[in-house]
Structure formats: C-alpha cells, structure tokens
Length: 357
Image 1 (cartoon, one colour):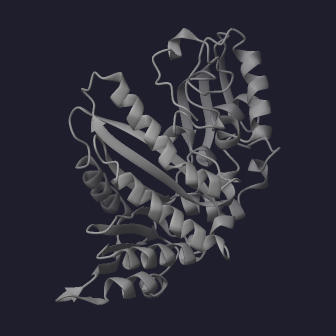
Image 2 (cartoon, rainbow, N blue to C red):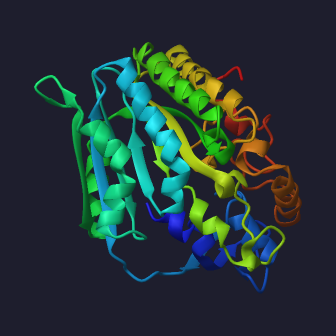
C-alpha cells in the first residue's frame, strides 16, 4: 500500500549479509560487493546465495487517508464503467500517492477497492475518489450500487484488516494456479484505456466460464513504485551502485494484475492439474498481447511465463545477472524453475506440468 510512495522492498534495503554458493560469507551494499547487492535485490530467491541478515530503511509514521469502496456488478455496463473509471484515474491516483488493492468482479458480484495515501488530507482524498464515490452512490433498485467511505485511519490497523480478509480466502487443502502481468503506463493512455478495460473485463468472464474444477479471482494491485521512481536517488538508477535487478516495468508501470484459480489440492489426477494450469496461462494471454512492453513479478508470476527473461528482469539486467551467477555458482548448485541460469533439462523439474506456451 505504501510502495508507490516509499519504493519496493529492494529499494529500502541498505545492506545484505549472505553465504554464496562458492562458500564465501559476504557483506553487500552500495559500497562493496555491488554485483551481489544488485543480484540479491530482484535476481530471484534461491539463486545467488543464502541471506542471513538484512538491514532496511524505516520511515516515520504519517496520517493515512483510506478509501474503502464496493460496487455491485448488476450488469455488464456497470462493470465496464467501473473499469473505465479505474483506468482513467490510475495515473492521477498514483501521482497522489494512492496504493492498495482492487478486486474487480463479474455480474452478480461486488467489486471492492482498498486504497490508501499519506499525501492528501481528508478533503483532498475524498475529492480524488469522487468518480468512484459517485458510481457507488448511484441509485439502483431500492438503494444504491454500493457504498463508499474515505476516512483517516491508522496504517497498522488497515493492514491487519486486509490480512484478516485475505486469510478468509484461504481454505484447507486448497491449491492455486496463477498468472500475472505488470501493466506499463502506456496502457493507460488514449485509446489503450478502452483496450485495457475490455481485456480485463473479458478475462473475468472467460475465467468464470471455466470455474469447474477451479474458482477464479482477478486481482489488481496498485503497488508499483510509480511515484517513488520519479524521484528515486541517483545512486539507485540503472548503472548506479544501488541499482536493483527488478524488471524496469516496475518503474514505469501502474498495476500488477494477477489471475488466481483455486482448486482442490488433494487431487491426484495429473491431467486435472495440467488443465487448470494450462487454462490459467491461456486466459491471461490477451493481457500479454496487449502489453508487449509489460513484465511480470517473479514472486507472483505464471511459472510458465513465455518470456521469463524479458518479463522478470529485462535483457540488460539478465545479462549482468547471468554473468554474476556464473562467477559465484559455476556448478548451478542453487537453481529455481525459470531462474537465472537454470537448466530446463535438470531432473528436478521433471514433475512440472507440460504447459504449452
């Protein structure tokens, strides 16, 4: 919720201590072992070493304005209008420090928004959210389309409430298939707005049509460090001693969109698992096609991302990461699926579904 204003986790790391695959125990920061500092901040967990200690920046507590809005999807037109309002205001809201989570839904369900900012006062925050407040307050049946509140709140209490709601969505013995995309700012401009709106709307409907044997949820995370990246320290820009190896799309994107499909984790039928992962991957393909300059967040990515190098890191970052990997782990002791320097013929990956990408 605060990453838009304060940066990603990797932006706030000041120092890392780690054991490398070649046996060295090192301290990495902006002054020493800068290659390792670069690799461990975005290069992928389990690839470059075992982190034993990390030092983070902390930030003073500030008052937060929190918007909680829900809108009933009584028909397709309302859902389209909801998406249009989100997309038309996404860049403006990012510039005002808003960050958080959006859960769009299909017909017969309610879409919800949980966004917060520390950069506006309460009157400014309510004025900023007015397009969605107006939609929620529109008359419908014997009442309105939804409800909306924008109030001053404590960040810790907000976070605990969000965690509690998320935990209610987790069921024992459940498994998840997911696919995701970082949406660049170009997708929120001009005619691209309508294309993005239609694509997201269609993804919801397509996923709902395949809810057996998996239930689907589309999530929009307004968590990219858009505002922070406009004024980030020069030392942390590409080529600087504090540069990180995350996808450049984190810097010019506005949304991280995830499709999750929950299914019975006790299933023993490999074909069922493969079908769920295959359809999850395919449902998100239109969003990949719409955003050729986009990327993906590897910690919440499709394991079968068709272009992991371009999506997770970008070609320039990957070239440096691969050089570092070969220097510190020449035998590929530490390896993860689709990670830097991975070998797809490694027997450790033989249990993965054979997904057509």
